[in-house]
Length: 220
Image 1 (tube, rainbow, N blue to C red):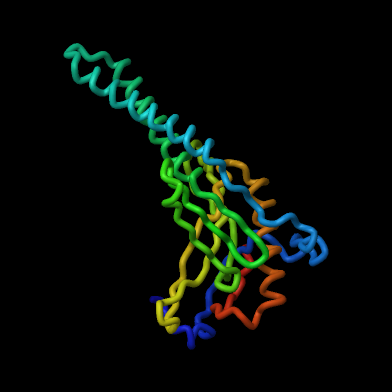
Image 2 (cartoon, rainbow, N blue to C red):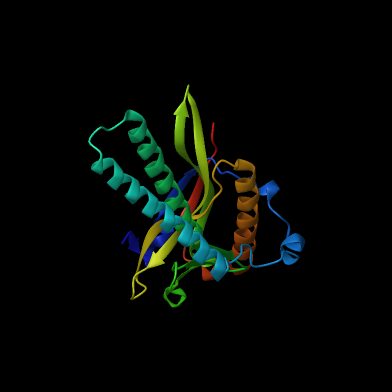
């Protein structure tokens, strides 16, 4: 664990360059009128159909591999097609895995439902309470670098505290709330909503939180 909860106030966390300024956050009146929760749950039909789609591509990739191994006179184009096919299959598998995660944000917590592809009774639910969240921001994950230009997936991230079973010790953790791929504007809009709800909660319930001391360092 990171430290003792009783000493958490001595843990000074330095944060460089905040993504959203205080002037951009929503006021209390707009937060009151927000339709909560933010986010939606995927239907069972969507989960089943998307899972079948991924399974079909995995089967096609395996069958194509068997065909390659069966023929002695291998063609370079066949190998290139296989590389493209397996790359595409891995891509849609990762997107499907991330797509099975439903994230719902209300006025005091983030609820994460990790969906099971076929057996819906085995869904796993994780709850992160606002009182344990001390930072939210956009992280750029480089997916391609070309001619000194980075192409990113933009993730809305939070940093939060988890506690030991006896409640005496804490640990800092990071969590990707949502992946907006290459759409930075949508990520910014989502972050403003999340930050507004967090600020509103901590302003009205600050006494309930045991968080490290935050020191913002402006980005030069």
